View 1 (cartoon, rainbow over the protein chains, first blue to last red):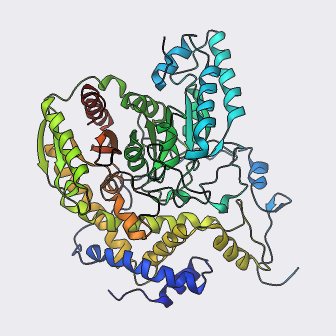
View 2 (view 1 turned 90 degrees about the vertical axis):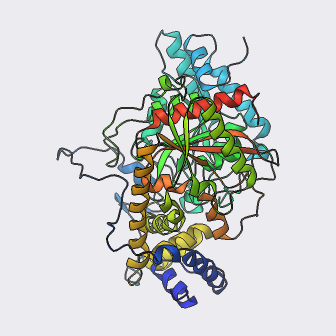
Amino acid sequence: MASLSRDDVAHVARLARLQLTDEQIDTFTPQLAAILDHAADVEALQLDDVPPTAHPFPLANVMRADVARDAGVREAVLDGAPEAEDGMFRVPPVLGEAP
Amino acid sequence: MTDPRTAIEIATAVRSGERSARSIVESHLAAIEAREADVHAFNLVTADAALARADEVDAQVAAGEDPGPLAGVPIALKDNLCTTGVPTTCSSKILDGWRPPYDATVVQRLAAAGAVAVGKTNLDEFAMGSSTENSAFGPTKNPHDLTRVPGGSSGGSAAAVAAGFAPLALGSDTGGSIRQPAAFCGIVGAKPTYGAVSRYGLVAFASSLDQIGPFAATVADAAVLLEVISGHDPLDSTSLPEPPLALTDHLIRGVEGLRVGVVKELLDAEGIAADVQARTRAAVDALEAAGAKVEEVSVPAVIYGLSAYYLIAPAEASSNLARYDGVRYGLRVDAPTTGEMMDATRTAGFGPEVERRIMLGTYALSAGYYDAFYGKAQKVRTLIIRDFEAAYERCDVLLSPTAPSTAFAFGAKADPLAMYLNDVCTIPSNLAGHPAISVPFGTGDDGLPIGVQVMAPALAEPTMFQVAAALEAHLAEQGGSA
């Protein structure tokens, strides 16, 4: 496996919406590379005939009756948000222009 | 009579009216007051609410009602369990100021059983770590030696029980986060079968691995707590359609005729200290002397468990933690646009270990690497389940060390990979969804506690607790130490 590069780390940080400083990228790159190198034992296994397990037990879809009910927590949920208005979460402009 | 100490003794005294729940809670709050500044088990002590709740329990007793099997028993809650109106931080800055609008199912069930929550305990941020050093609010200290870590991620809950702040605590275990701190702090800690306890209201880390479980000073107390919190919950779609576990009757059955396997790959794993190996072998000998049939067994795929876990858990975490974006919970760092606000909030809110795991998981799931890493790890999970199934055809339970060493010093595992290696014995049960328990079994060369792990197949908690109780009884006969 090609070892993890600084550019890989910077790219993944952007995907994960994290703004890392150059120093943080310098720190993380060898740490993450060491962890991935440790995983080389798994990467090297021949497992073509083995099915994957996503969950310890088979999952079945769980349905409930389609009945509307008042969960009664809207105000409490909005209270936990940094900013709310008119029953909605309020955020800064999405497209980058001031309103 | 002497002061009731265990949860069972306390509940008996409160239910009979011999002791008031208020006096019980007051004495535990006094213990917290005396030593919490040194130990730092809690993010928040809810003293007033605890006393008010104790008065309710006492009023029930006075009215001739039964408050339940945990009547008046103080309990500490890991701070990733939602509690209505009470800050739930996950020891992260990103949840600063957030108060959940509902109680976790386990919190509701504790209240219905008469328990009294005394506070929210410290953890590694979002349960990612094995020492509590990753808490945004500073580490918890091991009550047995304040220069050592209590383990993690549920280090605050383990320390709270070990320090006598509460006879019971709840933790969560994704790769060993209940069992390893229980071993380091010299108490009992169990991870139940996946789905045996509702995860509703547990802040998610890795959803296919997370499970809530009990901490207690005794096996019997841990059993009672698990009985109270287990059983089907319609609010968790992964909750098993099972009644609550029935454990208490199994504790005195002994181990005569039970088949016990020692997992060769875990006993001899790289980094397992000699004193830990010796105590594990002593546990095997004790069970054999008590009538169990003991053999060494091989579970070959567990040697890949660590690598598989550190791909699967971060992958699930990177997805679960995408929700912390400054819109709905806690912290927001202002910025001109929503995208920049999200980036700034996540960067300011997450600590380095959480950032590392999010990045590792994002990488493992990203285009071009998915098959090589995440896909392979999921297949290893299948191998581990198959190998356990083969071992459980020969054995009723399996034994191993809980952790490779006794509690280590602060800063001793600054390298992330060195920290991850701590989880080698505990991870396989999470990947398989099986129950496992850590029982104190003497001390190491440094005088600090050592735990032995008993593993069992899915929903075999009764047998697992039976063996744990036998180990505890053996230790008591030996005078409480090695």
